[in-house]
Amino acid sequence: MPRILLHAWSLAAPLLRGRLASAQLPALAAGAGFDGLEWLDRLLPSWERPVWRELGQAQTQAGLGPGGLSLCLELRASKPLVAQQVDLAKELLSQCADLGARVVRVGIGGGPGASLGRLLLSLERHRNPQARLRRPLGCLARGAYGLWLGTGRPSLAASRPLPPRAGDLELQSAAWALQPLARLAQDLGLTLALENHYGLTSHAEDMLLLKDLVWRAGLESRAGEGTPLGICLDLGNFHPQIDRRAAVELLAPAVAHVHFKTRQLDPGPEAGQGDYAGLLQSLARAGYDGCFSVEYEGPGDGLAGARAAAKLLRGLWG
Image (cartoon, helix red, strand yellow):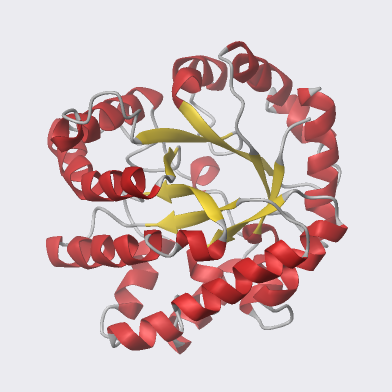
């Protein structure tokens, strides 16, 4: 049976609005039959190491195994803001062991037009770095995030045109930003996984090019140490114009982590329409043996939605 994590994103609204404390998540996840947790950086109550250590201990006490962390970057920001994000990400990576996280999904943004990531980054850019460590989102950013959640967490991939393939310069710039994170993750024994998302990672071909560029940006000298950057495959993040079966076939050999995303309390019809069974078969043929993280982002009870998704996943994976 696969190891299945409960992604904190499934309970984003109650976490953000204070109706649920992060310290309660381990017991909830264990009680719902999950094997571990994947945290989302923006939803953590603090980025300070003692808080992460307490959350890690709560997971151990609940009987959960190793989990993950979803890390959000916006690499189409200005160079100073990209550098600030990378420095912060390095600090967070160094604390993953305290959180019990062994795999780190990284989303790099880069979509055209307005985006939630760029809005939050803009609202947070003038806050004191120590204040951000104590509380990742200030009042303005927290309010904007809450308003966005109130719109039903719209899928950018479904509501916007498919971006063109990324240019060489864009990919090279992203690679130079990711390279120090990949090197540090390798040193720490973490799995760093780049997620398919709207923007720079809309196309599977660009993701593989970026992965290769990160390797060539300074890690190729570490021969024999394994690939420092894998793919986090989100089954629900493909743009409608993307041939998802072809994309997964292309990415499958590099997949290091999987997000099993659903948006309905009864996920069966949605999974059928999205060919989840076929996509999972492609992963199985490629020998995927990592864990799955369930992201429920639909209406109603997030934990109930995640449990239904996990049940479906177990049946499809076999």
